[in-house]
Image (cartoon, rainbow, N blue to C red; front, side):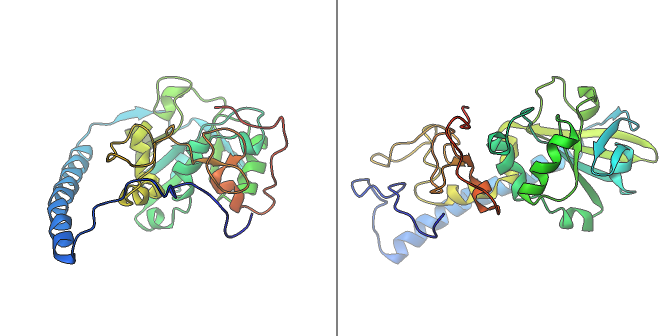
Length: 265
């Protein structure tokens, strides 16, 4: 993979661009939007305050997960701390590394180091429904911390979900002595909170270039949601097929994927 590559992504010379104005007019328009942004932030604070007031429900603190050092209990994952944040990472059983979930890769990659959570007294773990022997090579290849655990044999309600497929989800637990309680869970677009690349793209004039978004007339045509989460070796997104989850190209030993190994979403 070279540092630069020829790509027409976002470089359509016929596409419309924002209107050009003087600096004062630009600042006035920017300030008008800022008022809306501040209201949005305050509403987020109010929602977080309501989140802190949610009730909680008890789960089995003795439920056993399997990590690098063998079986351990949900209670042990707190490491003596009061709170535990868990990401439930999708796992496609028996599939090669490049065919693991690109969406979960994006959700977790930017927040994989829990130093700031630990400093606030919050523990962190990743759960996946695959045998640990299958997870281990993936964790090593991705350079992830060793806080991954197999939950292949655990019943779903303990993990804060209702159905077998309920992964791609953030879950929060609170410990009281030897008892553990589920306080919160979030999935779908709620996971965008840990996808800072999307927040940055939303600051750009072209945005995510996804078809569902509201674009000005004449902007480049939007594509299927998540089209750039998976890429070929040129680093350019390619509509969920082929290649690897995009960040994998930054890992040592990431080779082009041979024909027949392509992922189909």
